[in-house]
Length: 185
Image (tube, rainbow, N blue to C red; front, side, top):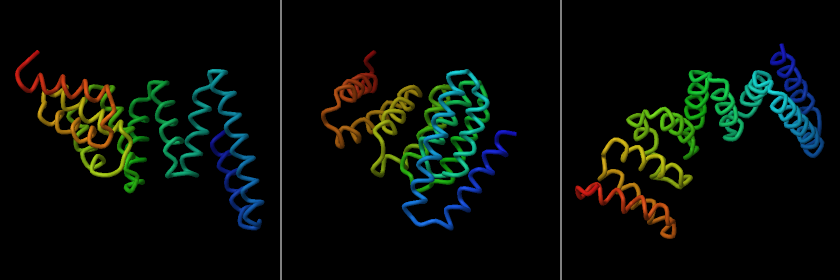
């Protein structure tokens, strides 16, 4: 029931937005967003996670390219152990945002937490060819390492370190993978 009511509010705001000037529309959306965030906090603090999830679903429909909304939705679905729902959220975000270089990261993180490492390379190899969040490299390299694909892990760490040569953790991870690649423990 809450979802229907929230969709009606969004629809009416969208209709009102068409009739208003740009600055007035921005004020309306700013107030609506503030209220939504306040309500999310209230429901979260009250432990009403299903209500939060419903509101996030409405937001996701309104803002299909908002990374934070979609990752918050998936995270909340994971909190209530709706694993299939969370995965579907991450997959849908990736599919509807093909130009976002980080679109596959939430799905890859999900597979990483589930130790489904073999699913990660196909998702993140394309991302590291573009300007993307460093976690794309990190998750991908760890996925290769966990599959004992050390040469691929080394390649990804080296590629990342070309971009950020001062990342001490990446240097240590590279050294560990190189040691494993050469047969060391």
